[in-house]
Image (cartoon, rainbow over all chains, first blue to last red; front, side):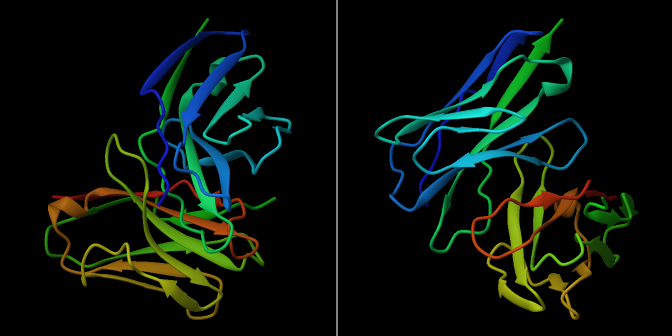
Length: 111
Length: 114
């Protein structure tokens, strides 16, 4: 399985943008890039996913490098409720269904 | 709308006891997943159902773990002769179709084996 690398932790000030990086240098052409987050004492929550083009939704934006070896999840204005562990996950469009979460990035948001 | 629900939310079992954890997926969702999350770690895949068929059980850690989804909706994860290393949060997720579509998670069941 293609693997991802994320920083263990990041810190942001409230109401500022946050850029969460993810490296996936062994990504294959059929891998989608998914992001989930997990707030304390809750189950994971889907955030966004993409294949090649940048994606936007109400929660976040996903910027994908042209060579697809890295991506960045962008939270445009961090709030205290965005403090969570963020997971970058590759899913194979041909056969993937199980999520391989890894360790993720723990985001701390300070007022 | 109603999301994925799990019961019980908390379960304490003595070592050697059997436990059954229930998952009610979102109505109409075809796929159902079980994950195990140890303290401080990311969730790890246990097993996957498409309707009533268990298509992958490669993540189940031992033959003490058994999952079923007999009518293609509610699922039960059963752990026989619980051990201390089974202590974890057990998460259930469902998705509307097969393949790499987004998964919706329940709140989990925290199992503590004493």
